[in-house]
Image: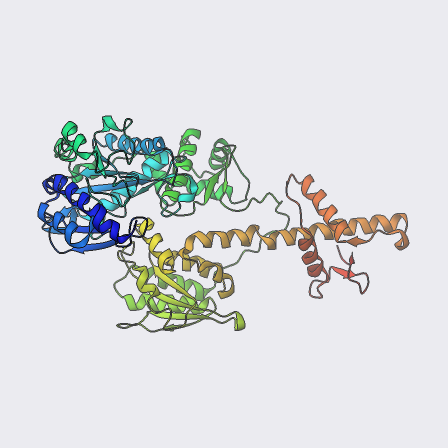
Length: 610
């Protein structure tokens, strides 16, 4: 549909529609900010949003239709006297295209059930082919920030109970799950108002309904052509429902959000059950909840009265919590309802002991400085501590600071593999209250940097921040992440994999896993098996036939030896040819001197010392 058609063929219908419903919108939202949605290039093209300076009224809405070609109207519904205090909390329920309507309805009912546990209710709006929105009236109009945090907790609770139906992960509609979004509960972050039209040929209506109608109506059923009949039959449903819920108060809801103890344990980043499970599962083996409990009791990691059901519920809910926050859970559940570390499976035997690194005095001093300055009152001191930490990790770190300048940058001293990272440091009591990912990326081009890092003590509102980190290409480090890297003596080369948009902690876990269970472990194990089995075979050959009849220890023979040893050790894994080649190179290295090539073709080796 082109501009001419929108202007002449449809706009008259739109104006006539709002002449009918504008009084209803004013009744509920008089004085609210107005965000106009227009389609200057026609339906099917991206909309144009315009924030009007005029407070909402019947006349303002109709005038916007005529003057700006408005099709829909959005708002964040604050108090007219305070744009940061919201009269309604809003939960947007969205799903991938072609999702069956019943799935959206099931999600809405799941959220309502959680609200009812808190003696609350919401007004349901069929979004007009855009999902379902739940508007929760609060008479005391809470401030946006605590309200958003509460909504995240509420949604996390719902997702925990419905992990195969729901998610809070933003912008990932390829997973088949219904998504709960609450980030629009903030000044300037708007969503469609009740009775607003949608930009499509059928002019579907964002329709408030009573819960008793949910099963009878589908999203998009009500349009501009049918609204008059609906209003005559049902009246102003939104105003009626808002009146029914007029006594709801956020203060009471916040105080009454009493979560079960097992949920609270799972909600913590590392509750005692999760901490115990991660410690037990760090060997890479999958275990059932009762096996985790048995081992945790043996190691005295959990109280003696802990039950299998408690362990299972805590782990399931924690996984859902992490996914709901857009984070990578450290553990996952397998198809057979067991749990394992969220890394590639590793059932290789621990044949070669891992080298235990010690923290040197210089690294410990830097760790102590990060601890002291991240939550202190001297931002510059934290900036210098971060720069010094990067310097210890193999960077040439430069502090800049000051007004209209980055806090610093760090150059990886890796020759032709070098790279530059912009550093933006934020202090806070426990978390950074205004992380501002855009600021962390602001000087990237001017300083010819490859990556951008935001560093702070911790972060709240992780779902919203994750979206911003991805938008601006920023990696968020906590002071704890840097402390971990210092404690394991990481390097600029190893750290390059951390600089992907998102939270560094999710990749730090991968780095730690690969150190203990990755290629280095496998090659060390292959070399040990080849050395043991090869020496044994050589001894047997020497006793029975001498050099002339001795078999050659080539790559194929070594692969058979190692795979047989792995099977005897109970592993389902198999070595690769590349791992055998690396093991041969290691054993024949003059600094190791455990094997020698049999000839210049370098196709087989002999073991020179057991």
